[in-house]
Length: 121
Image 1 (cartoon, one colour):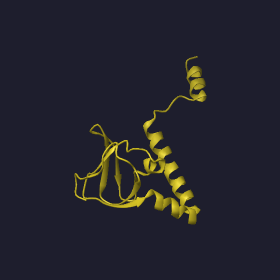
Image 2 (cartoon, rainbow, N blue to C red):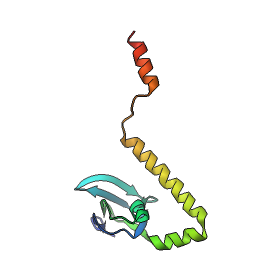
Image 3 (cartoon, helix red, strand yellow):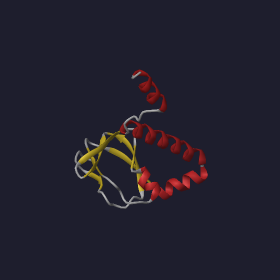
Image 4 (cartoon, one colour):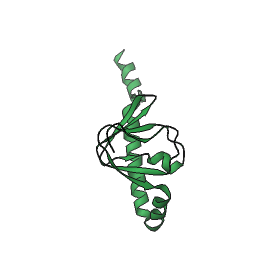
């Protein structure tokens, strides 16, 4: 697909996930970029698994090659090869935790509070 082409629109049904093979995909909400995905990344998998509408718009930032995988076909494959589902769950969970940690400001721990109180003495 060419740069600027939409892979999906916000609010569209989600029956497939995508494996990015080449190029970059930009995910936006109300014209604000939320993420840029690259070759090797999965796109649209969380909403495809949950069978909910797409919360973002996705468009090719550069020329893009992506492999579409139908949700039901993927579930059928997992029934035959459950280890693949477990591996994808691990990878997805790790990515969510990594992304969440990068976005959430660090909160003080009890040790920080104790050390701060100690420093003020």
